[in-house]
Image (cartoon, rainbow, N blue to C red; front, side, top):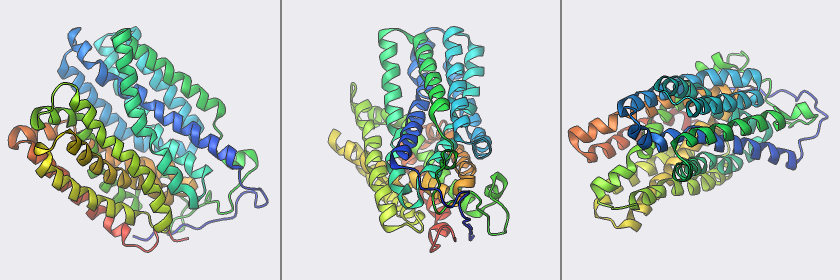
Length: 425
């Protein structure tokens, strides 16, 4: 269970650390990259209604979504290895450009086969984002500051999701459903080109270096880091299992929360859409505060904070399950915000900072890809399992499943959290 990482001198011991302005530029560029990844991830959900009106089968769109999720999970493993081998600049540039082109293709050629092939392949292209972005942050931000920086940076996947949905809705209202694919495809392709032009893989490429460079990290067995080393690392696998439970809960809430608020809680008109945003709003607060507390109180093993957050999430889910149908709008917003607060603290640590700590600068992309790849299996389940549970046993059983999966996440992260240090140096 122990993971040892041996730090070696930087490639140029006399090199100064990169200036804060250059570090900030790399963080902001990667933030924009993952923010805009969502513009070719959320567009199909906005266009589904108009597509059905045009004669596309809802069942076909459902299968396409499932195929996308499977390719996304597989792509996490592939992209982890690619990101460590080629560097984050190429991975982000290629992934965004290919995702943009796949989206653009359906806008130009709106046939079922193009949708099926393009959106399924898009799962592989979208999978390049997370491992490469985490790799870049690990290379450009020191260990001591990474929790706080990631607390800010991780808001990109919440705000990106919200912005992508709103942007696609605006395009649909003003222009039409084909333009959703055309405009989003062009935007993401342009952002991908910008990444290729302006991102810098690592500080050493510009003559800078952090004193505690881990570019030549080794595992406890004396082997160099790499995809295969991370794939057999018990801590990485346990965090992946923990993330499996978290992703099931998060993506179930993404997909079905507005429906639950309308049909079960009884909210009307556009209230479910606005109230459901409370979940992600609480998540933003959790990310920022969680990053600060992780650095301040849990610098040696941030997984301890993740375990506490998971326990908090379970308690809040249990309370909300009992009270949601009797709450007014403000009460539901507060309850969902509390769930999001705790869930996103755990999410950011398990899939982000803890994975970065375990991988070091040499293998961050591999560690993040493996953890997110295993976790994405929970995302696949979120498409059909909640529907069947609600159909057979009622919506109460869906919240019970959140508690069950939350306990699984707790048990998986527990052995890692109990260690005094996540990584032995």
